[in-house]
Length: 143
Image 1 (spheres, rainbow, N blue to C red):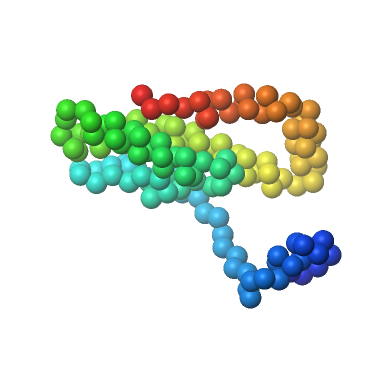
Image 2 (cartoon, rainbow, N blue to C red):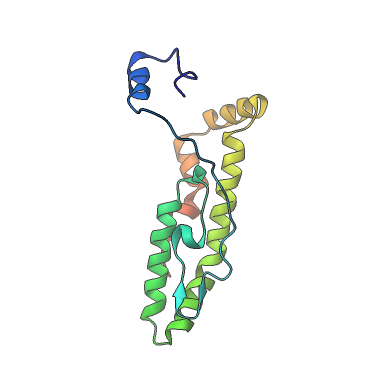
């Protein structure tokens, strides 16, 4: 990492020099657990549906899971049925977010030609359009 940024500005070079060593780890992807709940056990967050970081929704999805799980458990039904309802309520949204994160990963790490086109398109969009693009994501409310 230090070699890759050998010509960096002094503040960045100083920051990179602080750790004794740097670790590299792969980003892995896995489809949402099927099922996310079984019997009296439910998975939430990354345990149920790890998501690549290219949509910045990992923690948000865990919070959403908790809200839906709490709502499901409030209903007057046996715990296994409540957990099954939680899993059913979450699976489609989870898969949608995972697919958008995967797509963003491909777009963000595109080769030079695609990256140039991406930068041109994103540069012409106003901030409002970028926000509207993900209204479905940021406007979510538990039912």
